[in-house]
Image (cartoon, rainbow, N blue to C red):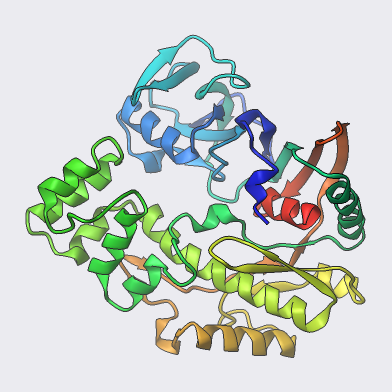
Length: 389
């Protein structure tokens, strides 16, 4: 059940438009830019712009990470006193950034950022109302199309399980191969080796000159600095802090998101009729096919650890405790500082989401193009898995 077979044949098959919860001001402490990009990650663009402007990446605010292999629109903020052209466009050719006057992002790869107003404070993660999507689904057989419409009716009636999507798990190679777990156990050397193994062969680990050459052209500047730090004799514990804080946080988020997904999956399987489908890394996701307590489920929020936010639902309490125990998490791990960041902190996330304004906008013999709006934090790829399989 490979979702990639059905979507993202080209970036323009997957169009995302971020929706802000406010209108731009005519003046303010921060410039607000509309950033449109194709076949580039949000982080790639942020890092390039920070170098171009001579500022830290942390000075560029954004509300969320958008898909790389897609045509996306989102917003960024830059301090008002930083000189920035009102419009800037760049493409990558042969690893080099080339300035352009304009780019047709439906056909070409690159980005354009255009000033649209001001704000009084920088954008922060999660500070958007949600995202609009326009997605083309390919290779639909008659049977798959029939299943799609049947699943769509279930989603319209009961919503969809609000799992974290695969974008959350870029730092995971296998089912239990989390960089975070190495760090939690104090195995920082293994964590670093695993981190670089995602980018390519680490057969020359410890032979830093050779490893550096092996990864030539593949590394960000901070990754090059990290390897050079190890070459100078920096300990793994100090070297890992060369990674930006948001990267180190993502190791924690990937693991906590996995645990949260597992809690939701087990909860659904205990309470409702369900279908189980393949996810990434041999993981499974289960989606309910019928719900008998819809109002309760619509309002259900599942905590990450259940320490600060202890649920009243006894079934959920039992599932969270068992899932944490099976994963080897101890009481002393909650809120611990690991690699310079606090980990395994608590929070709440809605168990389900309801897509808004869902429309089938175009149909062919083998494809369907759909449009819809999702609230912030919900994943279109999760909804598509629910609808297609």
